[in-house]
Structure formats: C-alpha cells, structure tokens
Amino acid sequence: MSVSLLNRAVSACSDPVLRPWSDNPASFAASPWPTLILGSCLIAVIMVLLFALTSDQQLLKRRRNRLLARTLELLLFRHDARVSITACARILKANAAYLWTFAMPTLIAVIPITLMIVQLAAWFEYRPLISGETALLEIAFDKSIDVAAVPVTIMLSDSLELDGAPVRIPSENEICWRLQVKSEQESWIEVRSGEFVERKECAVGQHLIKVSTKRTRSDLVQEILHPVERPLPAEGPFEQILIRFPPRTLHIADKEVHWLVAAIVIMMIAGLVTGKLFGVSIT
Image (cartoon, rainbow, N blue to C red):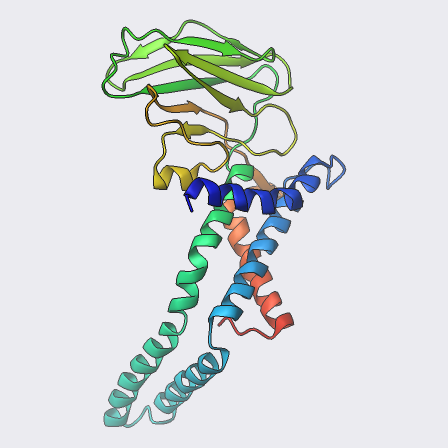
C-alpha cells in the first residue's frame, strides 16, 4: 500500500471527527483549541490501544518491579561500596530489559501515530489566507527544463488575483508569483506548461480548515509530510507547487504556544488517563 493511500485512509477516518468541531463557529468562539484537544486525545487513545494489543503487560510489570527492586537494593546498601557497584550493574541490566519491553510496541505504533500527527499538522501548522492578504506562489521545475524560457500559464479561481509579474529564478529553477485574495471562498490555482496542467488548492477563509502548502512529486518523505493533496506526476515538468501560507499561532493567556508542544502535552495526559481507565500500563 502506498503512502498516498495510507494518508487518504487516515484522513477519511480523522476528518469526520475533527471537521464538525472546526466548522462550528460557536465552539469556544471558533478557537482552534477544541479541535486540537479532540485530535490529540484521539491519537492518545489509539496509541494506548495499540500498546495494549502489542505489549506483554505481565512481562512489563515484572520487569518494572525488578528495576524498582534493584534501585531499592542500591539505596539500602549504599554504604557498602562492593554491593553498590554490583547493584549499579544490575540496575543497568534491569533498566535495559525494561526499556526493551517497549521496543516492539513502539515500532508498531510509530507509523500510524506519525501519520496522524502529520494530519494534525495540516490543520494547525499554517492558517488560511484572508481577504486582502498576499502570498507567494512558487513553482519548481524539473532540472532538465530551462526555467528562463519555459512557457507557463496561470489560471486562478475568481477569489484570487495575481499581484505583479512573475519572477524567474534560474539558480533555483523556479518561477514565483504573488497572489492576492479578493474574497473568502473556494480557491485554487491551475498551472499549465505545454500539455501538462496541474491544480493546487489554496486555503482561504477564517474557519479552521486543512491547509495544503505543497504539492510535490511522489517521494516517501514528502508524501508523509504533505498528505492533503495527491503527489504530482513524475513525467510532468513540475517538481513542486508551493504556496507560502502564514503560520498559525495559538495562545494560552498572552503566551504564544506552538501547536505541537500543546498536542504532545495533551497526548501525554490523555494517554495516562486512558491507560488508567482501560487498565493498560504504559510506563
């Protein structure tokens, strides 16, 4: 199964849960926090369930108790140098065995959890453009194409317009345009070069919606990091189509908080609570 199909599967599962909150203007005055909290809690619950299914809970408890016993041994005989040295060795061995218990569950969970966190990034890393704002549209071409001479035509939805002439950058093999938002409605950019035509979504509006910054050719890392739109065809002239959206800012009181930091804290708390509720030991 390709990364693109995995992304669409994760999106199909997560979007119906998150979108009703993001589309509801009454949810905490259209704050992004309810959707972030819900999404982070959903990831935490899935993470705990995966850990419960793939870990040996009895073995985990035995190794944790053994590590605790070795630590108490060091504390009780701390005045005996010989015993303390051997106790330290036993602590290291017990700790290595305890940590090894987490290896397989972690390896199994890392792929779905990574894909879900990247889906959250599509909601919270950047925000849509609003009426009157401008953004750069950057189109990178295949290295075999002379960007100084290649013919390119841009077609825009009615809500967008070009602000100035294109700038060709041969050193980067790119052509750049400045876009301006005229109205907040469904927006897109269509790029034509020869017989090849590709469309790029442009997120516009004040609601919390997914923002796709880049369409790029099929590549494992790029497909993981940019899951919203399908990759560009390898046989086409375009390597990537990029719109530089403004970053989204979240605040607690008057302090700015990065969404990923907030999501990790929420996932840790939700994971511990879920583990207690389901009787799953995750520490």
